[in-house]
Amino acid sequence: MSVPEQKLRGLDSTAPEASSDRSCATCASFPLNLCAVLRRKLQAEDEGTSPTSIEAVAQKTPARRTIFYGQDRPELVPIICDGWAASYSALPGGRRQILSFLLPGDPISMACMFQPMSDRTVVAVTDVTFCSFRRSDVQALLFKHPDLFEIVIKSWVEEEERSAQLIVDLGRRTADERLSRLILRLADRLARRGMMDNQSIEFPLRQHHIADATGLTPVHVSKVLGEFQRKDLIRLNDRSLMIVDAVALRRISGS
Amino acid sequence: MSVPEQKLRGLDSTAPEASSDRSCATCASFPLNLCAVLRRKLQAEDEGTSPTSIEAVAQKTPARRTIFYGQDRPELVPIICDGWAASYSALPGGRRQILSFLLPGDPISMACMFQPMSDRTVVAVTDVTFCSFRRSDVQALLFKHPDLFEIVIKSWVEEEERSAQLIVDLGRRTADERLSRLILRLADRLARRGMMDNQSIEFPLRQHHIADATGLTPVHVSKVLGEFQRKDLIRLNDRSLMIVDAVALRRISGS
DNA sequence: CGTGAGCTTGACTTGTTTCAACCAACGTGG
DNA sequence: CCACGTTGGTTGAAACAAGTCAAGCTCACG
Image (cartoon, rainbow over all chains, first blue to last red; front, side, top):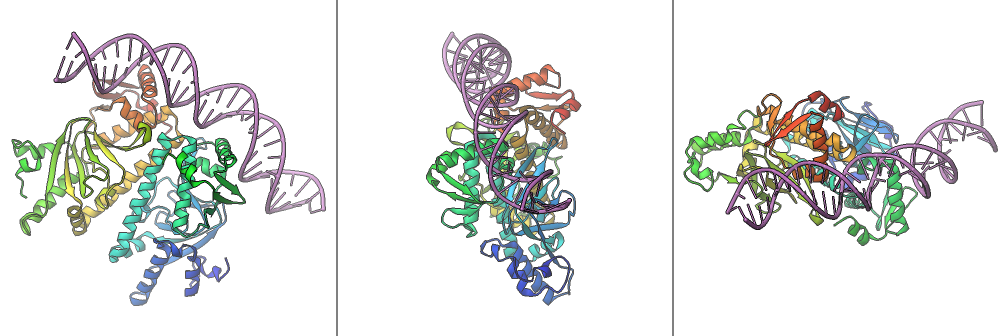
């Protein structure tokens, strides 16, 4: 990412206004572009009233690095500005379950704005840039701006809806159903962000991510995904995925 | 609407006034006794200001009856006053996944206070009495009383935590783990409501409920539960469950 | 008395995991 | 520039957890 990225990095206070817009360029089209919205409001705040107390720290991390660790820094609310991340819960024995994939514009979780998260880790799937807001700042902002508040609540409900879907998938659906649904849902989320070029999306997930999200093993994921490609339902190469036969895929997914 | 309780009680009009306290007696000890709290606030409201516009309808339903149906009555926020219920999502082919069991004091879902629920059904496990508030009333109340609001948000986060736990269970845990966890978690929730007598709780769930909550088949549930009893970890008879060996159970549950 | 809902048990089947070997791509350092 | 470890993906054989099918039982209820 070109641009005075260094400035955004952490605490250095010289950050020019242009750079902030830049770093959120990807998520700008997303209806809930929280990072940008919060930033804007925070800046307005700063000009009008008391000088600071409010700050947003932006950072970059390479792929595979942990962004956010359970109880570590409980006062922060990170939001993904660019790249993909995965939020998971780890179990004894190395098992792990991915609770959700985070796309540009997504906060680590909506609930996180109201209370620290327990027992959750967020790892970067691709290189990621994210901003961390202070929870107290975010909350103050929310209570002052009802419109913003409403948006947040609505997104929270949506997030919860996705998580209910996941429960159903894991509890009652076969591997084929789970995988087709995962693909369709990701494609949908990306499409809504304008990140889909005629049925084709960036797809940085490794098979072990997919396995951990669907409650399967990487081996089985490989087999099913192989099958999908042999049937020419999807095409998958070079970190990009194309949905060839959406109808069939949707049929497999069980509506 | 100051308290002609028969009105609240729904259909049978002979219910004496004591009955309202009675019906919420079970949940009175629960920190978030929303039904009672809302009622109290609503009543206060009524006295001070305009006469009505606010009302809470209470109803009884027998076991196995559907309490709340997807898009049906989207403006209502039902809260369980007495008995157990199950909130599930149904799939083609008769499969279903229970998302949560609702105990006395629980609203159908926290998110429901802010937005209608899609695609969810609530069925009575035991005979149930519940009150339905109007969402608009609830919201008005919440925004007027920050303390109440805070409680609701906190409960919402808790609910989400439970649902994350369920995802992990369904995605990454074995049948034994899932069942022991279900038992322990229910016991915990009941204990917090003061509904546990030395390791022993009312346990109205049928095995098919348990199956639908854990993503297993009733047959398999029977086998595992049978095994648990043979090992004398739990005792299960006459609609009540006693945890005999909590330590072993917790060990099986995988921490 | 009959009917239906619920539970148990056993034999068999199946979807998924486990294990293992192997290959390709990539970055790093000698 | 090559050797090498790491990470990711594929494939096949064998093992296993859970599902399916089926029969028989109890119990409550009208």
